Image 1 (cartoon, rainbow, N blue to C red):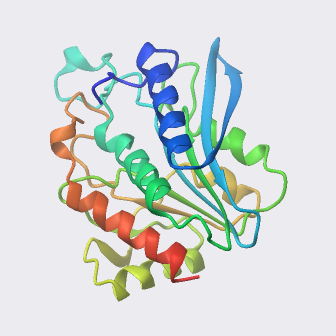
Image 2 (image 1 turned 180 degrees about the vertical axis):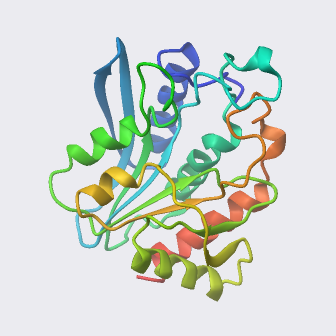
Amino acid sequence: MKMGPRTVGSRAHAQVVDWMVGELKSAGWTVEIQETPYNGFKIRNVAGKRGAAKPWIILGAHFDSRLWADQDSDRSKRKSPVPGANDAASGVAVLLELARVLPKDMDKRIELVMLDAEDNGDIPGWNWCLGSEVYASRLAGKPDAVVIIDMIGDADLNIYRERASDQGLTSEIFRTAARLKIPQFINELKYEMDDDHIPFLRRGIRAADLIDFDYPYWHTTADTADKVSAASLQAVGDVLLAWLTEGR
């Protein structure tokens, strides 16, 4: 967050890519940067990879922030960039902590993917979920599961089952949350999201979206670090860690 809004093509965007690469490498992951030209910019997905066994699991979160804060109550700020604390530095934070704590000898193939250019839909010349579309289209094979985390740092965190997600995969994760007695996971359907899980679902890959869309600072200049709770990040991280290490 201190680097500034991570809009595509900005200095902060480049700095955050370098920082994420360094964090993954320091945690012992093989790192790949996937670059794609778009609109005169470079979309850059960052992936930490480990293992070669089955199942093959991808965990993803977008790291870019939106070019325009077009939901801001102050109309004069609607062409300002979104700081992007919850949407979605929160997801990146959880992935980087998982990179640090996941056992190195897991009998799984794991990819932790920081996805670019998710958040500029409905802005002229842009679309939603560009980085995940590229990543899904270039997969050499079919992962067993993809889990996307987005906007999971809200201090008042309530994650409902997302309607478009693979419901069997969603049930696995919510059962883990129930076993751990994590109250922020609410086992009821609510929103249907156009999010980074959709490009994988279109290709017949089991994918689920963990998101709390009831966030009043969404796409505003008030999406700042003071709106994010360490307890919320911990809850999501605990569930994913248990699901990866115990629940499969």
